[in-house]
Length: 260
Image 1 (cartoon, rainbow, N blue to C red):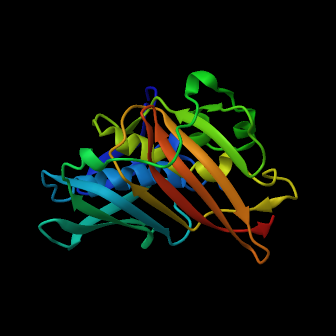
Image 2: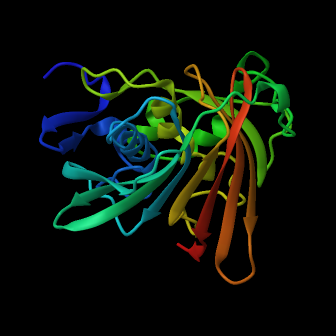
């Protein structure tokens, strides 16, 4: 078999197969949430698409372990509309639903006269250096990433840039947004409050909520991230997401914090 250059292979009729590049960090038998969220975003974009509609919010609920290997994706329009639509994608593996993704599509308008964003731009990847902290995480997905850290990084707070060289689906082109969403779940590991592994703590997320105020461009994803651990086993990872043109949205991940 030749070199693997994608996260997934399309087996036809809604059936896909994950490659080693989609392997998770918590368990070698599962997929990392980041690439599968990119694939589900691609499926949502391809679900009865219409001109003049923009993906504005994508919500992923993780219903359990995300097995590696073969799985199915089904999509539907849940709430059709002329200017507002709700679409859904479900990932099913090993006889159960593993992820439910829902996205709002809104009609695009010319709002250039009032366009503005309050989130400041973060320094670019040329002003960042290697992020050694990511090497503590195992798994094929983490190994697929080139990660650069902005100076000032500390536990619980950090700014990083990341990119990867792989297609989402073998032999298929996808919008830049798919590639960038396909790395966003890594936000939960870039500024960990505690060291991963050993007799430390685990803090997996049970969801991923992404809000987009414009379509993203390019191969670099910037994450301006803050991590909060509450006192009763619940945490929150919050990020402003950037491309090289500046901020384009936000993401949130709710965490279950437990001793390993």
